[in-house]
Length: 396
Image (cartoon, rainbow, N blue to C red; front, side, top):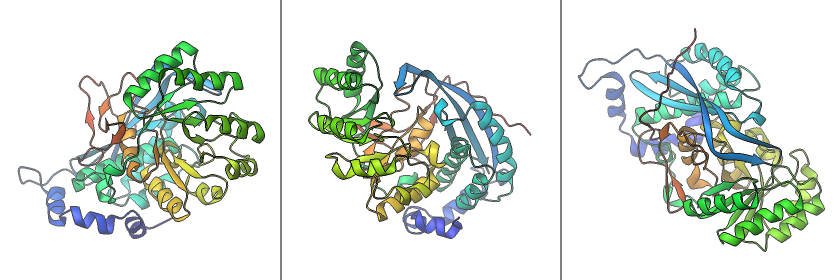
């Protein structure tokens, strides 16, 4: 695992941060309040709050449906500064509010061992070592640390990393599997929000083609496809992709089962559209393994344990000339704002999780001309919504 200096160098902090940060101002902010008196103790304090995201519509993919998504929001405080994080846990991830809470109880004393939030590499290495699982719970700590450190710096992470929001691609908005009339309604809503529609396929050929043809009845907006491992035969998958290529589709995400690498490699060689890894790509160690089998990778913070590892995945994928996408689960604006920091270096963004829920508790990134643009504000640029009844606490 990389040490602190390696992390800072690979993340671009040694060069980019120097251009936007005045070290004297940071030291002063860290050690004095507005009144000139020393601020609170320099100790990392972790708290959390369970939250149930309510879907605007029942959300259906190839293998399941749901109307809610369990989430645990986190808060890390240090010397008068605060950072927020999030663990979003759709059931197929195998995590729950209970499992995330148990993990955070174990993580709390680990955080207290560190005297500085700037040691993100070392902190996340020890957090990761607590257990093999709980990637979303780990991400909630990582995201909160990045928000916290960005707030101390007084800069957003896209600026610290030297990214340009003007390079953000058009964002996709998801239309789940549904009846013909429901598809029309959702497609119109999605097209009104952005320049791309993401369509969940992976059932029968009749159902899949109905989805696409129905959308084409109401809009010619370009479509991204997520088959969610639903196509089991490579010849059928290639036939479907060739048909989709005539329907203004621009990429295919995870068409086949995640362990079917040889079949996927065969498909990628013959496909007229790029094939992106989703379920096959969980963490940094997967990127090199998938090289040559997929056109690129979809990075999701809830799977890769947060922004620290996501940034490393970006660097490795770029070195391997693999195409990049940043995706999400059903998430509040906390995790979406985190993902938006990486959007400028991606070819596709699928950051619509907060758009899919009816009770978002934060505000941050904005959709501007079909693109998700991170705020030019410290950290993740988060503002807690009025009326959000969030009670953060910790259990010793």
